[in-house]
Length: 72
Image: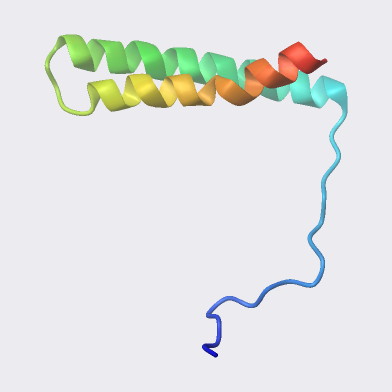
């Protein structure tokens, strides 16, 4: 059997955050995704590369905050 390059930890720490912190991080992520969407839309309209990738990335950034805000 091959040895792994990275050792597997025995204990994985779990960080618990308060609801207020989760909401603040969700709002920051939403604002960041709106900025990335507008920048990607600008690049897409100017026919510059990676515009559509930035638009898709902004949509992926919205998945977790929306789940957090709906579940609170």
